[in-house]
Image (cartoon, rainbow over all chains, first blue to last red; front, side, top):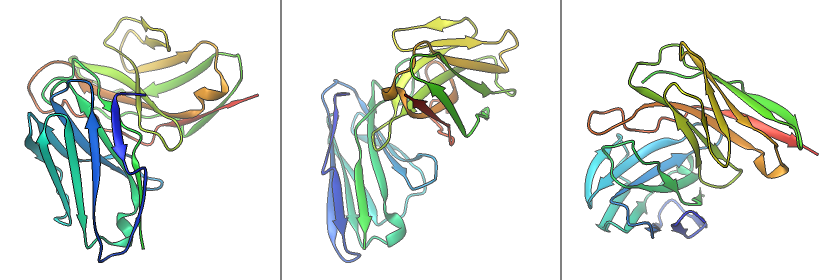
Length: 115
Length: 114
């Protein structure tokens, strides 16, 4: 248990569906991250939020829409996804996004399958 | 970012020490060596980090060569639960700048055998 929870753990959706992934951290951190891990590929950073403000968008397609209503919650809204978007989506948090004095804590991930 | 090179896979017998090497020949003076691991279908987990001195915590030891061009993560008594992909990452330590990100490579799949 890392203090970062993600729901749902597994999600199957069609290409026309709209769904959302949720991440919550109970660590009092100020920075939150979305990563994508496709099969046989390294983790890719998608978005970074610091104090609810987006500080990085790593050229992610607009069919992925993040939302950070407060420092403890992070959402990833999904719409009109493609089968190649099937992957493990990981959320992480850290004290802030501009310092590596503190490590990132990762959630268990959401396994997404797009049919 | 300095790039790292790790073997694709390694095997280790349960109860023995697991020594995972990492080459980072282009590491800069202000970059630290970090190790994370990812057990199958879970999120990555921080293990340890260091600059130039050897480091030890409850999980592992980190040995960094004097020229800092390579390092070794040591799990002193590997268990079956240590089977995971281990990532060696170099990263600037401190505030500000742009190299605060964790950039994951392909890592080393360590398989601990009974």
